Amino acid sequence: MDESNGDGTDGSGMGVGIAIGVAIGTSIGLATDNIALWLPMGVAIGVALGVGYDRD
Image (cartoon, rainbow, N blue to C red; front, side):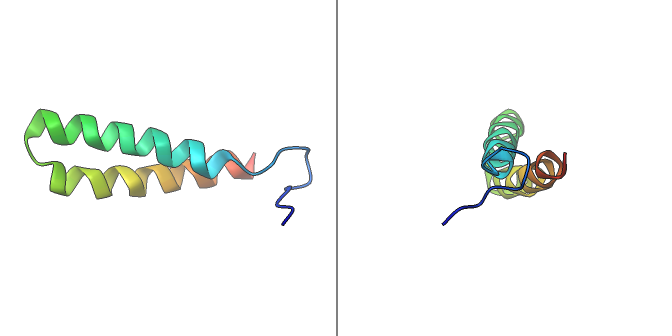
């Protein structure tokens, strides 16, 4: 499976975005004592960031 997006990268922007989003969501969730809300919100933010990284 070759998932190159034509510019020499392997399309790992989505993984990086999700990792950043999970970190952000976990941090906010721990700070507000509402991790059940903020962890999925962080994943959603990460997916949005990952799409942005992959479009560049």
